[in-house]
Image 1 (tube, one colour):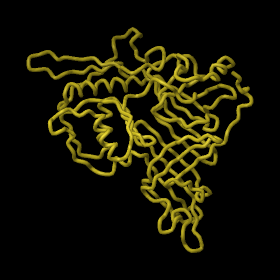
Image 2 (cartoon, rainbow, N blue to C red):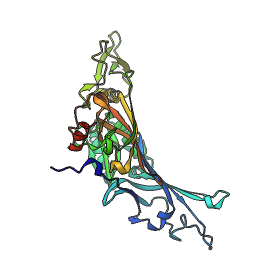
Image 3 (cartoon, one colour):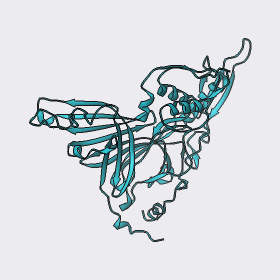
Image 4 (spheres, rainbow, N blue to C red):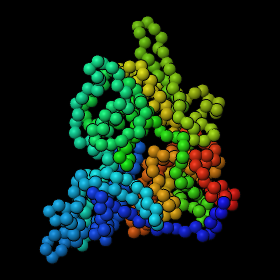
Amino acid sequence: MIFKPLDTVLRQPVECIVRVDGDEIYDLYPYLQEVKVEMSREAAATATLVFDTLRDETGSWLVQDMGGSQPLLLPWRKVIIEAAFGRHKEEVMRGYIREVTPDYPQDMSAASVTVIVQDESILLDREQVRRSWVTTDDSAVSDADIVKMIASDHQLETEVQPGLENTSLSSNGTYVQLIRERAEVNGYEFYVREGVIHFHPPELEGESQASVMVYAGTATNCLKFSASFDGHKPDEISLSHAPEEGTIVEEEKFTSNLALLGNRSASSEDMGFKPFSWKQDAANGFDSLETNARAQAKANENAWKVIAEGELDGALYGHVLLNFKLVYVDGTGETMGGLYYVDSVQHHFSQQGYRQGFKLLRNAIGDQGNVATENPLASVIGGLF
């Protein structure tokens, strides 16, 4: 196998492609100043597009009035944002326009239009729904079944795991609120991407994304990187069950059951102290299965003790970094190098280029090597620096 010499690796310019209702916005590109896309495990993905705008001799404004009686930039038009690396394109996000805000300052030359786009989960956040999810014969309905029914009503596909079964569950809010609540109970991730509702545990095995390269000579794509290891997060949750009168309080221990992203757990188990445990009381109104699931979910979330932040040069990285996926970090040493889970990404297209800020999570330390994907270049570079 022949590799291109390191000193001939080229930096490809990155083009931001925006489509509205399927058509690329060629006429608006001259006025588009920046595009920011925020992706987080905690909320829906959103994009902010900022346009300069001008008024013509008829009194119409070139951006907000484009399209005449049917303006192009209106709430609920579908938007797809892509990054083009030469001939190679990758989707950043898709969704619907949520807000359009023209700004008319005293200086007319500074007039602008800001467009906010939210991912497809906004389709599930349009109405308050009062509904019982129990069948007429009181048979159990899994959380995944509920998600599938909601997805079917909104022409969305699903990638789900079963989750808890419910014999008594009702909702009085939007579908987004319901699914997010059930995801939290199960310790699942919930997000909508490319027409698919995801409702499942964090995916910590399988293929990772293109590597984040730190201090890697001409292969470096990471502009800055920092990591912190927070030891003051509990290693286990001690669940106290409400006792019957005259009985002793029963406690059940829950530790993370997530796959480790390294060769040594980030817990304090091997440091010579007694287990670092936080107590949690069983909540009233929940059965034992749901109570235990909530405790397990809390233990899993507390296991993310290593948090890294940094920024990629998108042109050098050559890909769109996505959250809810794995990424390998190379060049930060044997302790902090290795696989991470992507918590959030901030994509920023501007006149200064394409930058990707990121926040990564890890429940372990130690570099096992990039076993999740083939990356021969990383091993070559690792031997040179």
